[in-house]
Length: 156
Image (cartoon, rainbow, N blue to C red; front, top):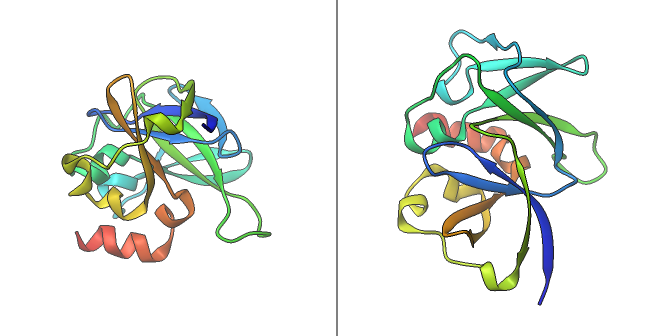
């Protein structure tokens, strides 16, 4: 049995994802965000973090098509690499509460439920597990941020 630690992120509307320690950079409550006119509803804000402009993605809006409150929300800033040995990139995900450190083992693995399978995030889902009765997706963050996925999401 393999036990792993992860950060559980509640993205709203019963949508939860897990990210590894190496992916989690920081959690911020109610930061100052900047609106980006003409951008898709699921990624319509950016924040300035460590002298970088970081896109803020609302996974609930991406999955279900309805965005949440656009002001006074919290984010988790994530690290990812497009390919090995390339510089770290960053993405901020809108969350409805502080991330929770959890432990997961192989016995928690499950199939992606139909309500999640039919959404766009299933295209970047690496695995799924149950945690306290809630399905939790493990996403490929680099693929989520790729031009190919952006084209797919904008066409949906």
